[in-house]
Length: 421
Image (cartoon, rainbow, N blue to C red; front, side, top):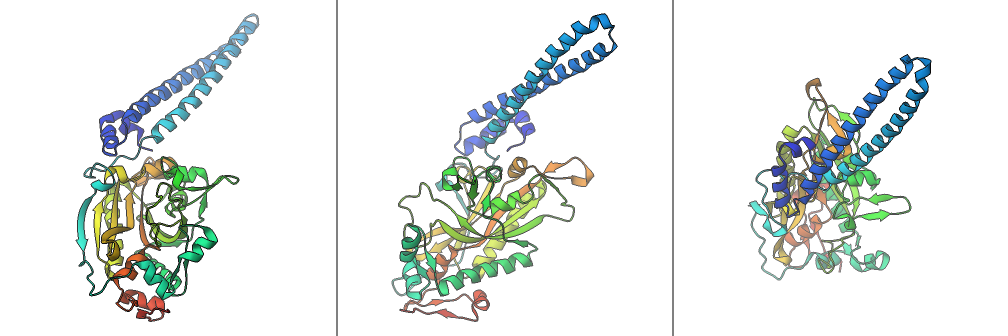
């Protein structure tokens, strides 16, 4: 959630952030009311408790003939204290609900608007040109014996697939390359659980207006994660971290699940938009003042991967209305997909400032002082979707695909993936 002090001191800033996201500012006014009512309820409770304590001393010191009346008054006071305590509990719940309805405060400079209002920050590489009609990634994958959509649908339904042969090897090679890069950059590798409790999913901001995209196991009340950002954010829930030696950086390798609710008819061919995929996700806990520099560091790592894989791409500053509730700023790196004649997202990296940490109670103690919420960041370093851009970018006329040099050590030195048909 956002900082209550910021809301009290600068409600107009919060309203501008909501407006940039295309959200109603009524949530800000509701949160202000809830905050006032919560503080008033706490004050009333504390005053009654003080009166109760003072009355208790008076009872103890009173003459015997006055005790009966004073004890009766004490009982009445006790009942009022209990009612006031219940009022505080109700006000606290209303306060939490009202504050959780406000999305993270966007960082200054983030473009306003929705999905199409992003700003392109830079492009890299030439758009691939072919002296032949390029095949799409699914046709290439089928010819290579790498992707089997038909059997994926037979076994599990639409938007499922098998990676077979060189396809399975290629995904593992990508993930291992990313893991090596993460290790070199000081990240601790983690294989996290992919089922999490509601409080963790809620704390990371995934149970808001996009909750329909998340798979829920009702009997166990557990959620399948769409990114290892979720369990990695919960890893230090309710903890005070020692950041005196720098940020805590983790690289989570996990299978991810997304229902793709609302995407009917979109990207139905191939493995661009699917229900299950693998991903290596970077996750960082750092101080709020270092978060923006860390954000740029994550983007640089992503760009380094795509450059070494020989992919043409652009980096965009995502508009406020397309950030999701937790991110204050998000950069997407989109690779060129030749047969779609378009850039498609391969990575996202988000600066969530202190939003998730406040909800999950993750703090640090700066210079031995009072604890404060940490900042959290996340970013993709490799995922299944990258296979789409790799196959299409590096294809040859005969249907073979050149393996980028950086991947060859992870594929036993293989230089070219050859069709098996």
